[in-house]
Length: 381
Ligand code: CA
Image (cartoon, rainbow, N blue to C red; front, side, top):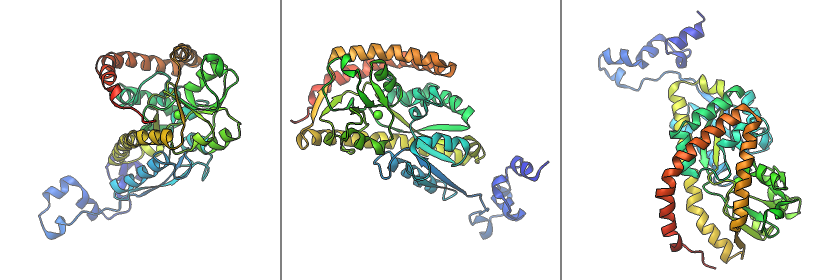
């Protein structure tokens, strides 16, 4: 038996090159039998292996909630592990380009990454269902799927062939429909429209005759301002300044009703960790997932109000007939996308089944409630 295997099997793999005496002092069963001298009451210190990791993200430096959330994740992992795992975070382009994040983690170039699953659609088509599905779940529904409905296990299964482990690490809440340089009245207005819109929502726009452009966050504003694109969707109302480049702000975000952000780990790196460290990573990811949703939810109302009163933005609801058309198109698109590969079909069927189940409750309990209180909250013009 190799020494490494022996150490692993005997549960001492983290002890490394420590002395046998220190090893025994750290071992739970042995400690109970030892006499309660001052020496044994002192904290048992073993030379635990330290992990110095790098994380690459798809976000520009300092982007609120998203990049800041990734940095917060790293910081809290370091705190919760008492420094056993430290993660140096690199924003998009600092180490690898934004859209190479998945590949870098998959190859083990870096230990972990942060972004959104739909960015990897070209490589893992089924990934799209784990970030945002048009006319799909809100945050409550998608989290119910991940943590209570088998969604996360399915996500793990889809990433496993790429040597990647996913965890939900954020949620944007229901997004807005997007910033447009012209009015959108019917489906025909999408013909020839160049729009930055990722994921399955983008596939719907393409089916409507639009041209989909996939741009990382840092390149959107300039492209919109210069007319390289005619429209963009984006998670929050204010911070990117899109109102300066496109006058119409449409809602609701039918294409991303509760987008999940992810932290991804190189599978070998993750699997080789001691169990308690894996548990800490999972717990901090889940806590960051909640934190980010709360950041968006807490800030969006005031930001929207500021757009209306200070920046005089045209806030426009998509006309109901257009929504109906987009919804029909979305349902067709989802089936077509699911037909493209077996994993996508598997995920889509599981998603639909769970949506049906959650929808029964949501329609009766949540929707009716929100309809009752809806008129109590009005924007000031
Ligand atoms: Ca979005």
